[in-house]
Length: 171
Image (cartoon, rainbow, N blue to C red; front, side, top):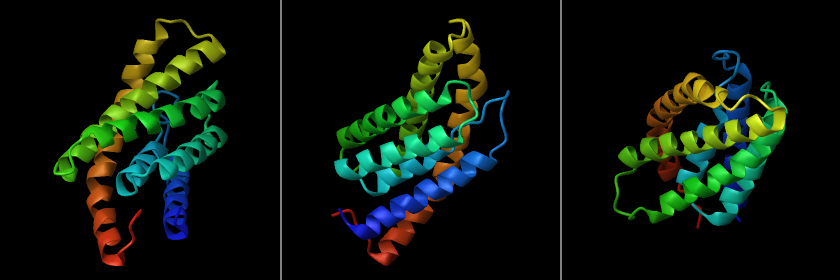
């Protein structure tokens, strides 16, 4: 693993943590903006070892900064699963696909996976009624998907340009 890449990934996670802390709650629950930074790290440095480090670091920081009931355990389970699903989907795509189109779609899918795993874990940890899953998904996860897509559309090309100019690669 390259030290430069690890430092950049740590920077992504830090920015995500700050955004996660200052994000306003939606219906009492904060959307997980830290996911955007994890997804961008995976898109820019698609290597398994970076994905694992990024997933666990993001999960730990999300668990430390969450206000959601049962969110600590849910984040620790959710982030590695989500990162591996996102990485797997990314690897299945041909190299010739347009990243400007693929990135927002993958982020939407990844955020939906993350929200589903998080809510499922939270339902089991704190024992909410099963009927509350749909309401929480619509009220929290769908807005988070929209926010993460917008952030990805803005940040991904910008970060890609910076990476190309600085000649930093994951190899």
